[in-house]
Structures are given as C-alpha cells and as structure tokens.
Length: 347
Image (cartoon, rainbow, N blue to C red):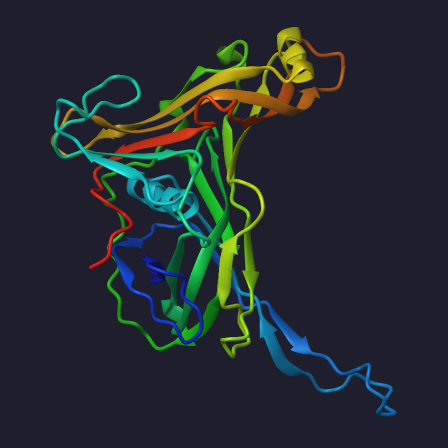
C-alpha cells in the first residue's frame, strides 16, 4: 500500500537557506488528501545576447520561488494547526468544568482545551508564522524538505458529502531534496471524525438562515517575500506581512431570492454572524463534543446577486460577505475546542 506522508512543525523564526530555527514541540502528521509543492525555478536565459545564434542558448540555474498547497478534511487537531499558521498563536485555556466557557455558554470540561483567535490577528512583529515541511514520496524513495512555509489563503468548505474540507496554500523560503528522514508518522486517530456538514449550524446571518445552501469561509493573509543581500542564496530569505490586514470572507449562496438580501447588499448593511461546526465525536471521556465557532459582530455583503431570471419554480442568489469592524469590536473570531493543549510552543 502507498506509504507517503507529510510532517509539519512550526518554526520559531522563518527558516531560509542556511538557517536552522527551533521547531515546535507540536508535530502535525497530517492525513492530507493532497499536498502540492513546486520549486518554481526562474533560469538564467541568454537568448538576448549578441552571439550570432538563431537557436535557444543553454540556460543556467538562477532563482527559485517555492510554492506549496495542502488539502485535507477538517480534523479538530489539524484545523487548529492550520488556523495557527495563518492567524497566529491562539489564546488557549485549559478546560476546568467551571470558569472556562465556550461561546454558547457551555462549561469546557477537564481534558478539553479552548483556543481562540480574535481579530486583529497576529502574530506580533513583521513576519507571519511559518512551518517546516517534510514530504515523503516514500514509494518513490524521494523526500523533499521545505522551510519558511507561510500561508497566504485558507478556505473552509462544507459540502453536502465528504466532510468539511480545509485547503491552504502559500510560498516557502527554501526547497530541497533530502535523504530518507526515517519518520514514523502518527496521524490523528482514525476514531476521530472530521467536522461534517451535518454538524454545521449557522445561527446568525442576514435574513433567513434556512435559505443558506453553503457557508464557505476564506481567510486571506497578505504576505511578501524578498531576497536579502545579507544572504547569498538563489531562494528568498525574507517573508513579511504585506500591506492590508488579514481578512475573513464568506461565500453564502441562498436557495431563494429575497428582496431583503438585495437591500442589504445595496446599503452595505452590517449584520451579526455566528456559525457552529459540531463534531459527532466527544473529547476523550467527556460528554463535550469537538466544536468550532466563527463569530463576527458585523459582516457586510460586498458582491453577488440573483441568479438569471428563468422559467423555474425557485430562483436563488449568491452573496459574498466580508467580516468588518466598526471600531467597537472585533471583526471576526474563531474558537476551537479540541483535545490539543497547545500549538506554538518550543522546547
């Protein structure tokens, strides 16, 4: 049977060629369904030189700009790792069955841990959180290491079947083939189910929540890569936050067209958002289910509209909404309760 695997750990500082940052205690051996990666070379072309040649000239290696992409079902531990990479380290609380309370007012029990990411998102400083990634094409005896992997976008889609999907992509500071690292991966337990559409409940939205057909969440993280003259390398050596904040948007198709939604689109009305994904698995021996919330005190439609007018019984609409702040509160907040004590810690 296929033996491929991927392992990731957070880097204390972004890793680049020649750097060896400390790696997190937390390791993610992901049950991914697809992991892309590319060296993305830009060779030195010389066809513009006056050499009297009327054919392509030999190229030489020049620069590389590695990329990566990741797709998996949204398992509770994995999802916390992915949110930490793009949003920064969460505020984490240890369940005590007393004072630690989730967004719905439930006491978080002993054995569970509540992680909260609140806008404006982190981390502090110039650089985003990055990971080191080991890709094992084990059956092909080929192994690849990436460093300085920064997440530019994360999407969370809740299709009707197949489990909630999480996709993320970005660029990296370094890419190289390596010897077999002899890793024995330990993915999240098979007994733990991913979040599924059957456990998704949109509690608060513009208009009638029963009209919603999908609730697709996208997190966009502007980042920039550069080459420092203090490092002699064909790869980038700097990754920094780019202009603009981290934004959270929602794609929200509705099965019925209603004038109230069109009015809200036209007026850029703000409306509260609250959605809950609840697993069918309890955390350990507790009666508490794995849960994820997305909340915001003011989403606004930024695009979309009705489907074409046709001879059909039902005509729907699709809207894109952006979670925004009016200065009085956070534009968005993610809360995850799972069995993982911490993510961004180092020995």
